[in-house]
Image (cartoon, rainbow, N blue to C red):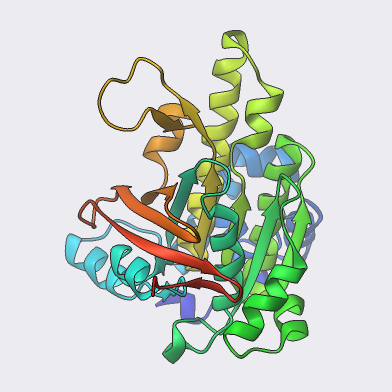
Length: 317
């Protein structure tokens, strides 16, 4: 197939040296970045004709095998999806073997339920060999609330027998200062992920900035529109680069709820429809936490317990 021959944008049909330079100057430095663009967007930013932009995008998508497929093709693709261990066998089993690539996994819950702990642990574990539940890859960590702690990474690295300094060197961290910066960072990742062998992208937390910057009902439509765009960014990133995307989310109380949990994740239907797996986290006794799969098309609903120890996420003893 053509993707065997096409290595970079200069190999795409219709992309000569001049067009390639225009694309690079506009930030389209990879085939993946071109494949997820629209003809109008590419034309406006680079100045090339819309018809030429459309042909270039079609060639990029063909090179990446983005096409109409049969259900059997899809099954084979999904069977090739890989997983990262959480550090807890029981939690891995709940998730179908661990956190899956090509998918967004959302962990939501109150403060102190273990959301950030899981993000730290997965950023370490993705670096493990495949036979130990890792992908021998790097992580990108978008920190929106200043909760990332290198000290915790150091403890967790020692807990799985990895060199702490090497582990920290393999985690690309950025402090997102507002919602627009958060989205801009993800755009930048389209250029980084393939080049740097990043297989885990963390957004901790997904909705914090959006909720703070767009308060009240009068801002709701704009907030949801931007949040929807952001989630689609992350979905494309996961699918194109075979990466696992982890997002955390806050909860808000729904007082009128008489049955079930009164807490609902922030973001409404926009966030509800995007992640492939949604996991609610709750506190239990001591260092124990309860994880419950509330939505996943390929997993049964269920729950389990895990523990947060000095050296990271583990099974309850």
